[in-house]
Image (cartoon, rainbow, N blue to C red; front, side):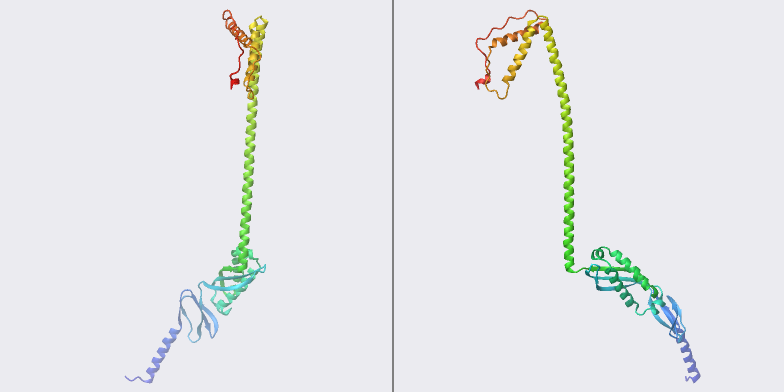
Length: 327
């Protein structure tokens, strides 16, 4: 079938309308925003879902990722406050909050954030000495985050985190730090050892003090006991002397013999048991001692209510000598 010119124009017109309608429909994926430009000027932003634009008048300008993104900060050299050179690198986490400002307020957003973070790393870390730099990373991260986030806010960007990944001092500084750490640990060990010795000495002195106190209390108690024993012994001797005196006053000669025999036997016992005595010489005859013993026996019988005193024992014919003298 041959179509005339009117039909051809109608078909072309229908096809043009369909193409125009299809060009005016935009599908925006999740996590992205599209900017719409009308005659090259920003007009509005398309959010995820179906969006409409006016064909041939409006166009999609930029397709902005609204999800959180990550940038690696390359390694750079930093001079600290105490003139130590270290190498540091990091990572940036950011999220675009306004697609229009992120597109039209700054060119090359990633490059701008990277350079902004690099310069502030040098500024913040350069204001600290090496020891603080190595031991206060959290403080460095907080300072960097506050500075970079404030600077990136006009670009429609929210910097969520900045982390310093690694700080590498020079090799000679690492060795010096190792020696310093070793010396510090040795110093602490010496202090702990000295403290232990001090505590040991204190405890030992306290123990000796308590021992001396207990010993003194023991000697005190023993002295009291000895004094009491001597007092009782003195009372017993006084009573014995009193009884002997009363017997003598009553005219009993056996009491005199008892007193003399007691002293005689006591003196002879001390002389015989002396540690430096090897030979015992008795200058007196044993008859006197035997007679004295007989007097003691008579006194005992009289005290017990016995009968007449027995006859005096016979006097030995030869003097007595200590058996130890034969050794």
